[in-house]
Image (tube, rainbow, N blue to C red; front, side, top):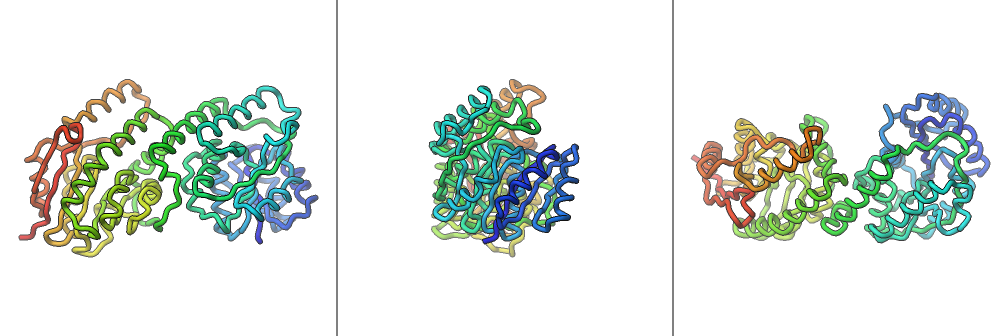
Length: 471
């Protein structure tokens, strides 16, 4: 089995040589990958010096300090790309001892992940100051309470069976910093992978200093709370996707949508996130189910144009065959976990749909059209007219300018302050009234069959049914 040891570095020049000597002393048949975030102290030069002497040392140089979780993620994908079967991850500060690596690898004979735990021996943290002990043990208790798993979730000293674990599971990890460790282990546990622990002792840091920013513990707790909510409200986001996704390299940037979906997966705005999830599940999903069942037959081929995260599509995925399209890869990554029975997830622009004429029995979209200009709405609807069969149906959930959500979100943004990031991209074309919508549809070759805006969805969206017509 090909084995790789992954070691992220930042200002670890003094530790590199000593750590590598300890690794050599174990006579391990391994390659070593250092992931360096542009250390200003000459760490990369030291790694390159060692690499000239040993062809099994590799370096992945990144442009700057991008986060410890991001470094592990990039290193893990490097391991997959270079066909390694087993991966060991460890710190470079000499607190993770190479002498424990054989035990980690041995544990992989009966498990998919082996974790070095600091909680099976009372002497594990001997020599640590009280503050670091308190921080570490508090983190352990919180992850057990919020995530319901007993493992040492916050440490980086681990071994993975990459030949048994799909790399798609690591794509589900959204944190770029320290929460990466407990989030990744929870996702592996959630998907049924066997996790074992071996006791380790961590000496106090001798060289260098901690890279953890002072605010990181607070951000970690916030992220943990967000995961706990997702575990209850949208557990599917932690699942392994069943449908493939191929990035489209020719697609222009998604105008901030990737950043939006990345923020939505993070732990900020927990109240907003909780209320939005409850609204989607309690109001939008039942309404979507009723509308889809009234418009289509079981097994019809339906396009979800601008699919976003797809949290409400779960309610209809067994009734119709969904092809989901979005310009945001981040959204599609979430979608294919939320809607595992979808026919396909396609990375494309809704203004240039990569499908043949008359390819679908119908199409729908939810809260997308309001982000487009009048010209873009025309292009979007014209493309939908092209790919829908003659007589095919179109369903639109179009947020209204007098929507309760518009009023509430304006207040929310005002209370958050000018410096706060917007909760979503600008809504520049909210539905005005029935005639406003009918004109757009008519100019693109659709006849509006019904229009409703009212109590059924708490005065948020105008729900429109239309039919493709031809001259």
